Image 1 (cartoon, helix red, strand yellow):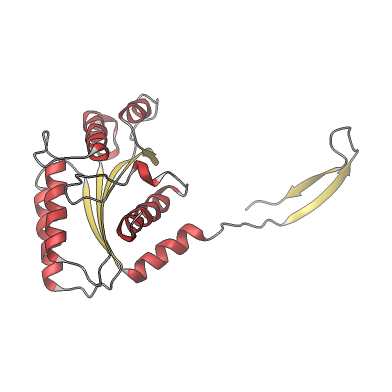
Image 2: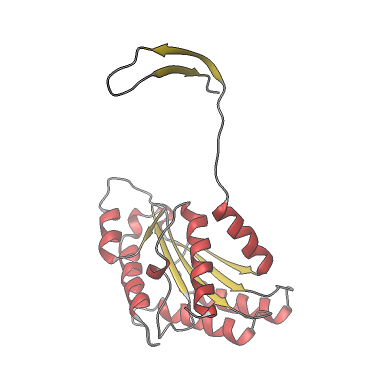
Length: 220
């Protein structure tokens, strides 16, 4: 993989892991060409990453109601700063993706996720709040300096996407080198826990287990 492609997979992994706490295959969420300016798409239904139309359909067949649903769009750029032209192209690509019949050419991954999104919209009555949520992430290896024109381009894109009326909420996030480091640390840190032992009793050994203990712990 090129540096640019590796960066796309890295960002997509960090964001997917952040939402699920589980490892997954980044090739299922990283777009292929043509990508309409979108480098990654992650669909979450009932807190699971959904990568096929069939899997999405099966989740909605569960007895649960008010399922959480979210679609995440990601653009990743190896650059010293955030570029207005790429951000504008990305927003236009997302807006076009959300149409019933997109006009921009789509690769295999985008076509798969468009079908998945159609399943989500068709099952809006099973979704918490009646609509899915949307997150849009702009990632760069550089620093985000809160430039006015970058913020304005982002707000314009959000306004256009929001006008479609498809989502209960839309959030935009700028991920620079510092934010990427924090994301990666969240993915790589080991989760541990400790308990207070009230007492323990050794029990007779068996043929399969040489020795074992019955331990009592206090929960609060």
